[in-house]
Image (tube, rainbow, N blue to C red; front, side, top):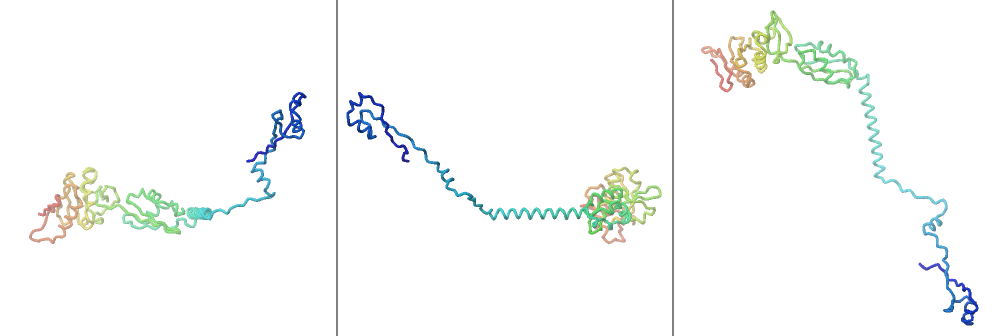
Length: 305
């Protein structure tokens, strides 16, 4: 970059002696402002004002009231914003609809439909579920129904289905009685777990075998072993039994209404023993050699005699 310094020449102070020695030519150069010779002129320089910075110069050249151009937002970002807004709107609407459905009196329970009862009546189940009446269907859970039906020992499990606008369908799965236990003049219906499901004064009305002695007399272990055997029998075989007894958990015996005896043994392999017994009972009877005993204690080698 070229220098902005301008050379100037200032003649120094002279004394007469020096000027005289320098001669007339030197004095002439000094008078004319020329460079000083070896005789003594001093050359000086002064620095000019610096040029303004390029940035300031550029700013100075900008016209007053200049505006900055704004570039449009990318399409992908605008599209993403629109999607987020749409999703948020849908979620708000869905939440509002769900809240309205959950708390709407339009869906209040008015009718309770009951199916699957044999030991119980539909009216008993409906009476137990009466506290749910008037409650919106979406607020009724399976646990609510099971909790209210808990005191009904006949109920083993339930299936619940809401049928808008105001009906609750309850399918009851009852416990299955497998035997009668005599208690005085009454006979108690019990299931395979020994749960007492009801009573009857006429054992013939239940078509179930009678467990000799009852659960308390023969002991819980013997009762459970006998009840487990009865629970494994098909319904058609169970209907042919007269009573069941057990001298020990390994010596369960059954009596048919025809007077025949079934030696069952213990409760192991009860499903296989039940199939073998059902097959033996289907064999046509031989009047010359009637069967008195069916021994299925070893189910892979059954014996009849």
